[in-house]
Amino acid sequence: MNTLHHPHRLIRTLLLVLGCAALAALPLAQPADVAAQEPDPTFTVSVPMVMANLENVGTHLLGTQMYGSLADSAISHSLVRESRMSWIRWEIGWRSRQPQKPVPGEDPVYNWASTDASAEAARHLGLNVIATIVSNPEWASMRSADGEHWYSNGPIKPEHYADFARFIADMASRYPWITHYELYNEPDNAGMAQAESPKAGPYWGLYGKEYADMLKVVYPALKEANPRAQLVFGGIAYDMFADDACVNTPETCSGFYKPFLDDVLANGGGDYFDVFNFHYYPEYADIWEVEGHDIIGKVNVLRRKLAERGYGDKPIICTEVGASSEPKPYDPTPTPITQARYITMTATRSLAAGMDVMIWWTWKNLSTAPFEHYGLVTQELQPKLGLQAFRTATLKLGGATYVGSLGLESQGVEGYEFRTRAGKPLFVLWSLDGGTHTVTLPSNHGNVTGMCGESLGPAADGPDGLADGKISVSVDQDPVFVEGA
Image 1: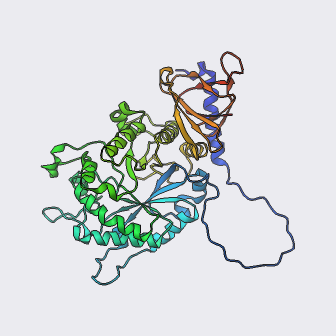
Image 2: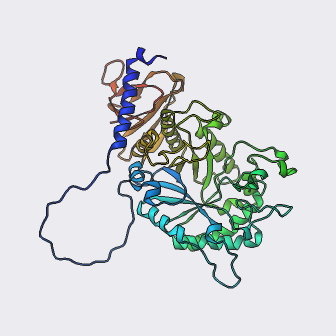
């Protein structure tokens, strides 16, 4: 549709682009200058140290995936603060920290040097860390039947479960501010070719019983080391499913094994993790849409499965959800604006689905195809439009509680109602069909904010022109936040 024939769309688009660009250029707030004064007497006192990100809005739903060093030069601490994120998901390799097999009767030897600085950086930034444990040392890993391959992200030899538990417990004791430990990335993978490739992909898929047995050893050790620590189920992909015939012919298996979660729970693993965890990408939305909009559908399916086994009260988080800001080999449609839209939509849906954490994948663009443009910042640490959408979502949804769906689908609109921390009604809406729709909301007054934080002005009174506690809002495909009185 020609934008020139719809001047309100043109103005809206200009506001979005200019507003986001202006926000990206804003410096962090600095303390006001204080006039020089005569020095007062100096006293020395001891107080408890409390590390906190004073730029944040408190613990909330949103975080991002980070890799490697968390030094300022690697991730830009100023941009992290500006994003207002509450969580990071960060990988820690067992192999690089404990390459040598422990000697019986002696304390294990670890290489913590590369971990200490990053763990301190996360604490300094006031971030909640989900530490994803990956990469087994060769001495602890199961090997292929022919002995040629060892599965560094797959099953551990049972005789080394205790060594793995000791490693995690010692880490939890060393970094008591890291309280969430996720055991492996996408452990439901059953593709042997991927597991045996140089990249050593995850490979617990056909070993649900073994994963449960491992949990039974790790869980009590972690709790003894840090009673506050939470054991997080490895984020399962739970899509792109492998054929059930994988059990009989694992050498030809490819994809993710759907019964993995059932196998873990059937073998008693459900009592040995605190938080359930999954991944979601919109490429697979059609699998779940019948159960709810986008990520909500997948949450509903997984929550029902957990409930069937008696674990319906487990908190649910998503440690990977993402979308590109540029075209991909198999999808020419992504743009910076579509990524920004999806960030807002997914944050809103995740909170509506009752999730505790949503990790955007990833903080910084990667260098490998087809994932070069999934980040909120470029590899050169330049902010993208998505960073402004992410920041706005944290400011608007941080501390908010879900009230319910607005039920506007018949009008071509998806919308949800929340209550802000201050108790005000907050509505988040966007068009489902790409068109522009006018909807009526129950409020005496409303301020409309675009997905990038740009002010779109007050909402008009109801279409009847009466002060009857209803306001009218124009909604198109760019999500809007409407904060009521």
